[in-house]
Length: 207
Image 1 (spheres, rainbow, N blue to C red):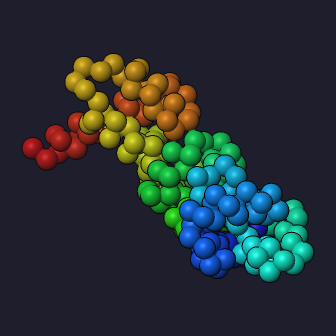
Image 2: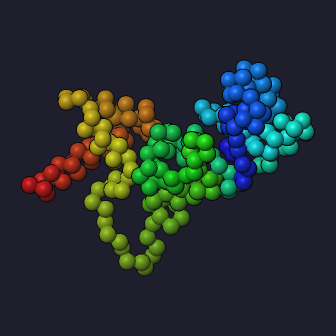
Image 3: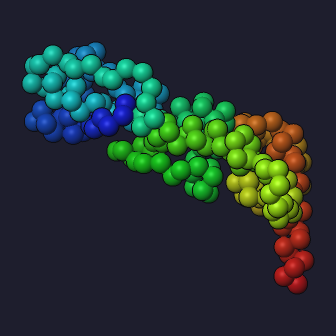
């Protein structure tokens, strides 16, 4: 997590500020630095550090403390976002690319999501919670053609059907998707069935 409003820096730029090659920095200076200034994203492949803490370290000054507690504008990693939403990191990326979740922001090649938007997605999922249903007296909107209409997982299921070798049991595909994206194999079987039916209907409509 990157705390609200905190600029970050990576090790390549830290080495440049220190005036040494990156390889030298990592071999000679990084171990002592990391003990004093821990990475903000310890579970990520990207080692990003708080800029103010880094500058204080390089100048030999006391390391300032980071803000405590949670804030709506904190930036969460894909893993942290997945934990909040109860899905896998792969599904987070799929949701973001298909508009089911905010696209997030990128810092040094790492995509992050604001806590506010992640919580809003969790608390206001389509068809769930506040605002998810029809209020009394309101006209009923158009019915969905199937329960998974507009669900981004349907696209994942359709792609899996297209790329799977001919004759692959649907249960095997569903198990693989569950391992990659979370949810149960049974849910993915239903999505696969819906995707196959939808594709067949579309093909008939084009003939």
